[in-house]
Amino acid sequence: MARRRVVTGLNAEGVSVIVRDGPTPGRFESGEWEELWAFDGVPTSLTDPLDPADVETFRLTPTTGRIACRLSTIYPDEGASEEGDDEWTARMDYAETEELSPATRPWMHRTPTIDVIVIISGEMDLILDGGEEAHLQPGDSVIQRGTMHAWRNQGTEPCVAVAFMVRAE
Figure 1: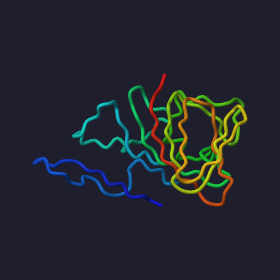
Figure 2: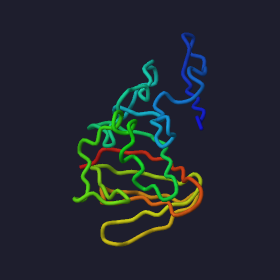
Figure 3: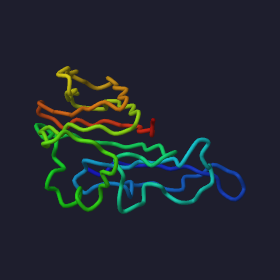
Figure 4: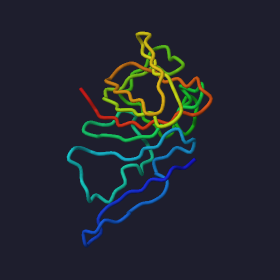
């Protein structure tokens, strides 16, 4: 399902206008990933005409100074659904993403980021490498600080979450 993304800006006279209205160009066909927007630093530009979601490849770990805003869908019992998916293989850059070896299912990984994640719909479990788990429902949030983790959806409906990922040290 393509979600609608409305982007506003200012016209030449300084009047507020809609500059884009439609699905994000940063959407995977599977619907599992959408790069909504990104910032190359703070403060960011209000007038840059480039759409930071309109790229061919996405880095799971944002580059230094970059902040990424994403929508992610975790399908039931598919905590590592990107494995073997041609689109994930072609469009996702896992540079600086650490994973347990050997690989696990669901996919246990960490990025050098602080992630602010809010569950929009559905339910899923956050699993930490120390064995702790948290069951998350709509409205719940996770502040992830560079921890080894995995996501698991044991429900019957897809879980949709929005995440802001900020590079950290």
